[in-house]
Length: 258
Ligand SMILES: [Zn+2]
Image 1 (tube, helix red, strand yellow):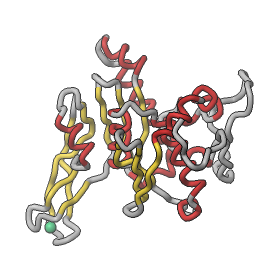
Image 2: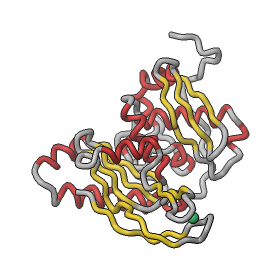
Image 3: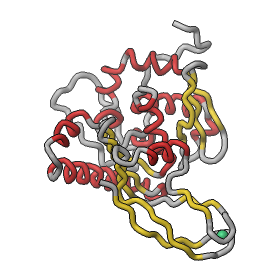
């Protein structure tokens, strides 16, 4: 089911007040055009009726794609610091949908990719990565490697690093930082990480078993060490912890093809 409500906007360019329909819930199985709008960055984008100024509305909503078994709870970008609360909301929304849904929804629940994201750009990123069959948890580790290699990125406390383009033919992902810099990330490195995925999921369970799949959560969660089956897997409440040091297989510089 999709559900849209009217939202009041004021044009930042000319102060015209107007109303637009925005989603509480959008089910792209029923409304497939909206998936395309998400990918192109046009979802929740409106033109002011007086001056045509383009306005994009960020709000909380639920994105579901039953055919692709994807469910993404979108939160406003300015609420990212409340990610633990947002994750709980995502899990609650998921259980509400599954517990009250028709029988087919149970199959959906078993295979679904459930995510918490902050803003439309991050929603578009997830949909894009899945379209190309890429593992978003591994992509977050790739972003973290980029951060470790780029001190100027590490110095930005509120950094936003979003994959905007996947070039299979060139073997590259392109990430955009905020509204500025673009960075190429090699797909070959992603395949290297994929080869050690089992060990990475044990070391960084938050990136593979929790809804907020973002490298940023690793600043709050110490990596798991060694095989300790009884180890507490819940996220640490130590929000003041220093960002962790990266702990990957050594990156080979020079990027020889395997
Ligand atoms: Zn206007």
